[in-house]
Image (tube, rainbow over all chains, first blue to last red; front, side):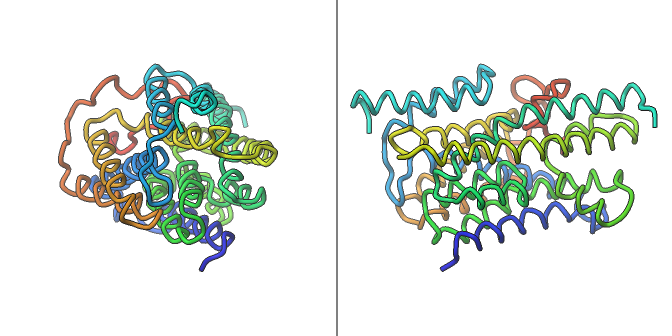
Length: 105
Length: 251
């Protein structure tokens, strides 16, 4: 099994190596619509999947708990262009309150 | 060297963006130590990886799957960072000089520095915008990561404090500005469904990774493409709102 340090360093190297691409290869090789579109959509897909897993998953189980209302409220606030810090704090407070009053796990 | 009016504007934009992204750094630091990483490991991610979405992904996947989800965490952060490779194709031609300088430029090639740079018209202002934004974000991001990690270290039980809800909301915040176009919104919805369906059957980390298939298929076929963007157009005049800029559509 990998150590936590190995994960941190390998992942960091991977992300840095990608940033070097443009400085090493001629732009004509990759600056085309399809690779660009796939790269941008990969960001969207990974982030959306992470939202789903962080909201519904606990290990390998699907769990309905205070994270769901917190995330729905957060999405609404982001739509209203409320600043990031305020939104994540409110999401945390919503979850804490729901749990404190025994309304949700 | 005296700076032109445009270059001064690029410098100001860079500093403003650097300040705006610092808040994300604090939440990253706090969530990272809550996920079980040490303060050192947290700071190394900000110093060496230096790409917000990828860093949050590593921490989020390790939080749910532990070290055994390590390979999935590495792959996911790499996929998330692929757009930086596209940005580097845009930035490389304006960077002149030694290899050390180009390696530094590569490390600073992120959403914010690219967005500010490509919004300038003269070559000089593009360079000023790139370096000012990259350095301002790098310094601010790393300082606030350390602060967030130190504060997070003082806090205890994750679930009790609602940090799991904060983590989920943080990903919503990273995703939201990228959903302006129908194609992106469809990919996000499908990716979330794929990941959710796989949670009970695949090891932690794998559901997120598997959602990449959605992006590759839709990106390759260009399904759901629409000429006019949904909702408001990209507001590139606001330097604090560059996270979701669709740089590809301009070329």
